[in-house]
Length: 209
Ligand SMILES: Nc1ncnc2c1ncn2[C@@H]1O[C@H](COP(=O)(O)OP(=O)(O)OP(=O)(O)O)[C@@H](O)[C@H]1O
Ligand SMILES: [Mg+2]
Image 1 (cartoon, protein in one colour):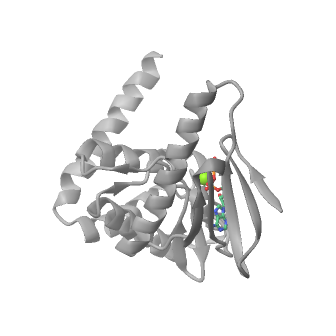
Image 2 (cartoon, helix red, strand yellow):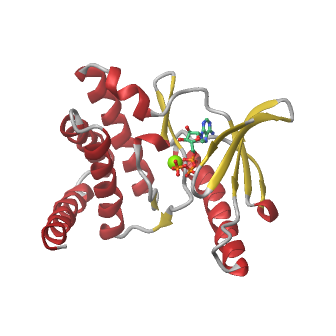
C-alpha cells in the first residue's frame, strides 16, 4: 500500500517475510540525465541504508534495515508504528516538550559524536514510538566531524522548528541544547557558537536578497 509519494521517493507499507515493513523506493526523475539519475538514486539509497544501520549501532533508534535492492533503489526496513514528532508537538505540555527535545539533543549528540551528520533534521524525520524517538531519512547524511557541518545540521533543525512550530521553537531549542551538551561536553561550545554565526550569515543574506 502506497503511503507517501514525495519529491524523491515512494513509500509503501506492507509485509515482507512475515514482518511489517516500509519499502522506500527512490523514483527516477525524467528531467535528469538517466545515468546521473541512476547514480544519485543508487548512492543515496546505499548511504541511507548504511547510516540507518550505523546510527543504530551508536545507540540511536532507527528502523532495522532488512534488505537493500540497489537496482530498484529500494530499502526494506521495519515499520515504526508511531507518529512523526511534527504531529504530536501541538498536543504536548511544556514539561513533555522539554523532555522530548532534551532527548532529541542527546540523540543528535550521539550521532555527531559518532561522526554522522544527519543532513535533514526535521520533526517529520523523527517518529515517536512509546517515548522512544526514531530517526529516519538519512539519504543526505554525511560522515564528518567538521564544526561547520555539525553547525549546519543544527541550524537547519532550528530553522525547521521555527517555521513548523514557532509557538514553542524556543523552548524546544533550549531543551535540545541541554541534551546535546550532555553528550558532546566541551565540544558543544564551538559548535553552538558556529550555529549562531551561521544564523547571522543567514539573516544578512535574507536582508539583502
Ligand atoms: N520505517 C518507517 N516506519 C514508519 N513510517 C515511516 C518509516 N519510514 C518513513 N515513514 C513515513 O514516511 C514519511 C517519509 O519518509 P522519509 O522521510 O524517509 O522520505 P522522504 O521522501 O525523504 O520524505 P520527505 O521528503 O517528506 O522528507 C515519514 O515522514 C514517515 O511518516
Ligand atoms: Mg522525510
